[in-house]
Image (cartoon, rainbow, N blue to C red; front, side, top):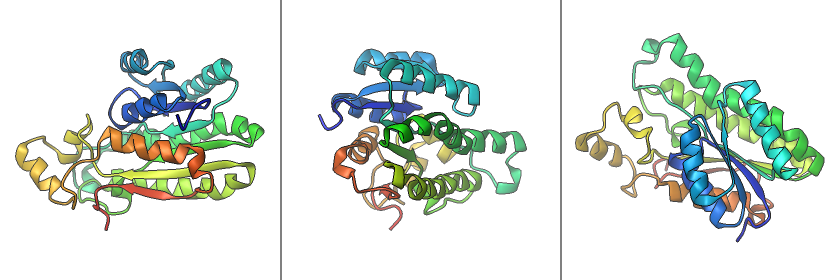
Length: 246
């Protein structure tokens, strides 16, 4: 019960890594808001772990402000924010990715971190307490070809996390980033271009431990960083990648 008495928002919490984080937080005693663009997925997860289900488009300022307002109205504070919602583009030469895809990618993966910070950091600052965990990617540290703009968006998240950490440390708000390798989640086929046994074998060959990251792996790592056990850790970029970035 390392998170007993704490409140947490997990964006993109309805599936994949976000669902693993939400489940772990709930099991460790936190009250969790599962925020997802798919309201049915959020509601299904909440029926399993308890908490609040919230429909949100993390690239939209009004939607993020509503999410924050609902959480603060329900709990009076938000102790933990996990910026997990993210998308990718299909593997392609960097100059062949169309502008609409590029804009949507950076709106969801990068602008969302700005919007949630604007909506929630004032309350954390007032409480002089908070933990923000940004889900980046091993792609930020060891880029894969033909995913250039996705790689760049996750590199942005690493830089943002470190910058946020140094600025917010004096007011008691910690900011850390997790860098998973690809997981067997709904986004996997987009990373690989096609989901075949041959493509999976090729992908797994780049991971020394020989397996994908799992939602449970991310839940465990996020739980540690969110807990008081990590009270002296801020600005960390923790790889959860089976050795991919060594």
